[in-house]
Amino acid sequence: MRTELFNVNQDIEPIEAIARKAFSATPDSSVEQWFSFTEMVKAIHEEKGACVLALSDDNEILGMTYAQQENPINGNEGIEKWVIVIAAVNPEHAGKGVGSKILGKLEEYAHSKGARKMFVYTNKGDDGVVNFYKKNGYEDAGWIKDYQYGKGNSAVFLLKYLEN
Ligand SMILES: CC(C)(COP(=O)(O)OP(=O)(O)OC[C@H]1O[C@@H](n2cnc3c(N)ncnc32)[C@H](O)[C@@H]1OP(=O)(O)O)[C@@H](O)C(=O)NCCC(=O)NCCS
Image (cartoon, rainbow, N blue to C red; front, side):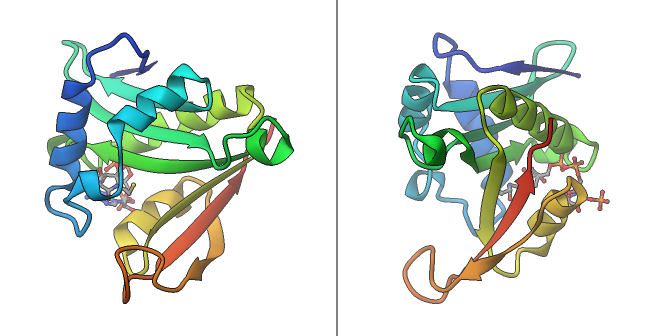
């Protein structure tokens, strides 16, 4: 398996397909309700976000993850604080280290662009996802009531300081 950065001239469709497949059996299966691939491409073009892909030896996309500046400004709060918006691994390849690998590469790239803090949030009670991030060095950073999907869906936040 190898990793590479998505570049804006690449075909987005196979990446969308992997994301949809990864989320199909989760509470976030309506991907278009909370994620925009068009906005992702725009942010990457503006160098305010980055998407890392995992590819097999025969170029099948195994997974993708995307993070962006939490605030798209040029001041410190824009440059230093990033947020992971999506991480998706083809379920047929889950649990084999693909997600951790692309996450590590994403952190490395964001750090090279000035990021010092990486946040991520997910649905409260989603222990599988929380464990994935904790296994990768993220710590609890609190929760926000009813953050997603109207009422009754709180979000837990996790944080990792990106060291040199
Ligand atoms: C969460 C996800 C990106 C992890 O990718 P992965 O390649 O399976 O992760 P890794 O193999 O590097 O790490 C596995 C760890 O992730 C956690 N995990 C979460 N969901 C998992 C799943 N469906 N299968 C296996 N492990 C999962 C476990 O803690 C596991 O640790 P363990 O092997 O010690 O039990 C992937 O399972 C996925 O795409 N899930 C559906 C979409 C989603 O919820 N994304 C996260 C929110 S943005």
